[in-house]
Amino acid sequence: MNDPSKLKDVSWIKPGKTTFHWWNGDVTPDTTFAPGINFETNKYYIDFAARNNIEYHAVIGYGGFAWYKSDAAGYAVVGANTDVTQTVPSLDMVRVLDYAKSKGVGIDVWVHWKAIYPKLEEAFSQFEKWGIRGMMVDFMDRDDQEMVNIQEEILQKAAEHHLYIQFHGSFKPTGLHRTYPNELTREGTYNYEQNKWLKKPITAEHDLNIVLIRMLAGASDYHLGGFRATPIEKFKTQYTRPLMGGTRCHMLAMYVVLESYLQMVADYPSAYEGQPGFEFLREVPTNWDETKVLSAELGSYVTIARRKGTDWYVGSINNSFSKTVEIPMAFL
Image (cartoon, rainbow, N blue to C red; front, top):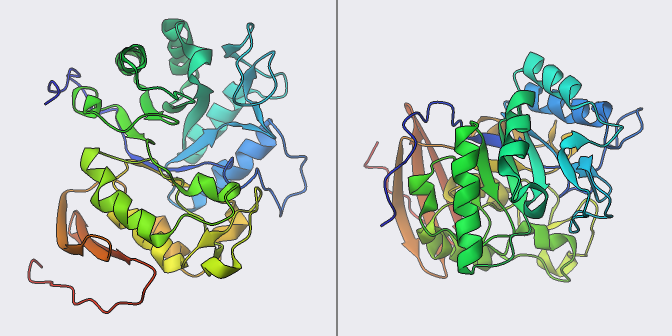
C-alpha cells in the first residue's frame, strides 16, 4: 500500500466537474465573436459553467494550438522555446481568471508534460500567482521508472502551490493518489476521446469492464458528457461534434458508476442546455460520502448507489442487450 497522505492541509482540494472543449472540436455554434485562444471563447464557457453548477472551466487552446507560448505546431509537440509562464499574445490570462472568479468558476489548464518539466517551480509559481486551481498534464505515454518518478515530482510540487492534477495520456493508477490526494483523476483508460477517430464507438461492454475491472485501481478520466447518442450501426466518425454509441441515459449513468473526482462536461453549451437529461448532469456530484455496489455481473451489468449528504444517486449500466434488473433499496 502507498504511504498515507503527505499533505497536512487538504481543504483547498475541491473535486468538481469541468468543461473540456477540445473533445467537441472547439465548437461555438451560437455566438457572434471570433472563436480562438482569446478572452471571448473562454468567457463563453465560463458563463456556461456558472449557469449550470459546473465548478471548473479548462483553458486548453484552440484549433490544435496550446494557450501558452510555443514555437511548435500542435498539442503533441513541445518546442525548444515553449514557455507555460507566458500566454499566446491573443490571450489575457489575468482577465480570464478575474472574470471566472467573478462568476464563481475555477480555472484549470491543459499542459503537455514536457512544457512544465523539469521547470516545475517556475511554472507552478506562475500558475498559483494567476489563481489557477489545477491542470491536466498530458502525453505521459510511458510507465517506466523515470516517468513514475516524474509524476510523483509533479504531484509534490503541485501540492506546494495548491494545484490539483489530472494525469492524461498516462498509465493506470498505482496508489499515488493516496499519498498525494491532489491527484483527482487520471486516464490510463481507452475512453470516449476515441470516438473522434474510431470507425466504431466505445461500447457499453467496454464501459462495463472499465467500471468492474479497471476502476479497481482507482479513478478514471473518461471524457464524459457526449449527448449525441446513436445506435452503433448508425455511428460515423466525426472529429468535431463526435457521436456516442448507445444511449444518453447510459452516459448519464456513467456519472454515477464511474469514479473520478474531476468529471468532464466535454460537449459545447448548446448541446446541453434545454436537452433532456441535462438537469441531472447539472446536479450530480463528483465526490461522495458513501458508495454501495447494489448488484453486478461481470460482462452483463452493474448498479451502484452513491450518497452525497442525504441524497442518494443510483446509476446502472449494462451491456448492449436489454435487461430487467431489480434494484434492492433496503439500505435506504
